[in-house]
Image (cartoon, rainbow, N blue to C red):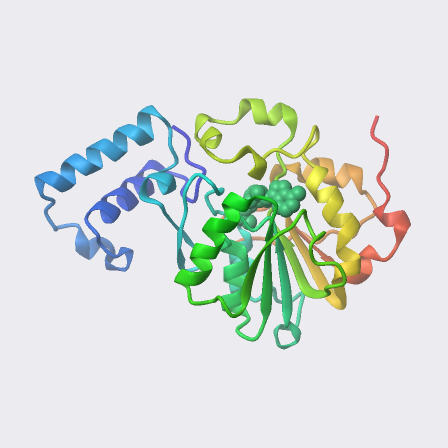
Length: 280
Ligand SMILES: C[S@@+](CC[C@H](N)C(=O)[O-])C[C@H]1O[C@@H](n2cnc3c(N)ncnc32)[C@H](O)[C@@H]1O
């Protein structure tokens, strides 16, 4: 079994499974433990458990829900299970890298379920958020979450190859958890990941195809005080070798995870720094 879809251990997944079937609120915590389950609930838990164990289906697809930045989202296999550590940065309103009161426009590239776009909308109640994705399927799920959270007036799901569909727009924050898994690593991923859309994971031979486009497009879509925030996971090492002169900042996370960089708009001004070092 592999635990990498929002939990990192069997116990938390088991708790979510039981709380889901018994329709218990996680806020109840241990006070819910004495509750007895009926035969129908036990049978349902058993059947979901079998799907999780035998077919290695991520639990979030079985329950069709995921928790992210304090929100409950609808998910299914059309979108990656939301788990980005960027949630923590959104909850902290991306301080100290931006002045929250100046944030009026945000773009989330590769929005999937809309998780990051929606977390940003909650963190910045006066901001408009473009939730961009190249997958129509993902955008269906994203729109469903936008409606569920009552954010249709401020979060706009748009079909877009990176920032192509929003020419001329300038944002105070461009954020992305793009696909960043290289070809060799794709072949070694645990079975759980094969249930997720490959479009959400695979990104060329070194995993940096999407990041390349984002770095190229970002400056002309950022306001002068804007920031670019991108998750690259363990592709961080290749990234640092490819762009040795870019002034990446690497936030530390209290709740686990890493591999997220922050760049200020002015760090993207110089074409030399943006040029790639040719790798041997
Ligand atoms: C790693 S998933 C992240 C989903 C979501 N942001 C999250 O954190 O849960 C990457 C997303 O990027 C989308 N994507 C892949 N290529 C893209 C492209 N060229 N332009 C826009 N989105 C793209 C995929 O459809 C997928 O939804």
